Image 1 (cartoon, helix red, strand yellow):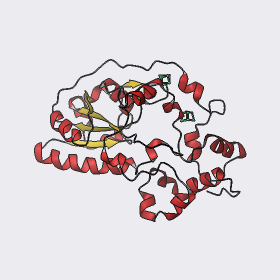
Image 2 (cartoon, rainbow, N blue to C red; image 1 turned 90 degrees about the horizontal axis):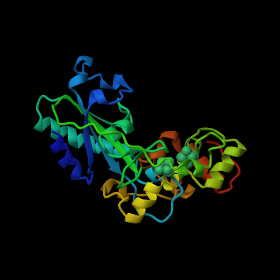
Image 3 (cartoon, rainbow, N blue to C red; image 1 turned 45 degrees about the vertical axis):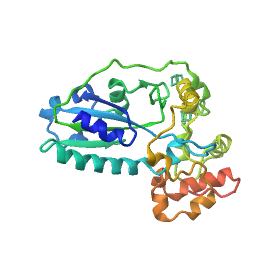
Length: 275
Ligand code: SF4
Ligand code: SF4
């Protein structure tokens, strides 16, 4: 099954894949494993993979993960394809696919699988794509070969903390841009000063692993979905021109149009910032 999954993922240019015994993972949301009995946990495995998402563009005013369409759409399509294929190939085996809302600590599992190292910026850092990856998992009762690696950690150079514009304020700019309602003058100033309509990539961009992967040119994704329909620069006109359906395909849609529209007004120096 592992080779089968690897081949399917490779068709989408996803090559970072590893497998682990579930009992080696940190189970953080056991209720997500409801399709498996607790008594079978010891015989379950987790196949973990990293999907690169950074595409090439010159400028942006939103976090890189939000420039393409919502990654949940990508995983939905991928998991439908994988599930259909696995049902046909492995009759009787149980499997469940997850991304983001996983029963296990994804970064810890990916590090144990040897896909990358744990970064002080809170992200999994891979050699090829640095931290610009989404993680996905397939949990299965099918017997597969697993390998638990020593966890590796980043350089701990402190550059990400030093570069963080919000370190003294104690609130991440990324969460601030996603807040609902009116922002305080200080919060609005932070958005204006650091020029982000949605999210923040500063602690990723400054990391030596990101700079190295950019220099080598390995950092960019070859996954079609993440190179299509890119909107790296958001403007009020772009948001207003989007149909409800187009807007719902964007990672920032879960907050409604209010939060991004407010942030754009702040950036564009318009007075009202109602969200
Ligand atoms: S900037 Fe330095 S400390 Fe921060 S994640 Fe990268 S290597 Fe680790
Ligand atoms: S995302 Fe931005 S604001 Fe948040 S911790 Fe990283 S550098 Fe700081």
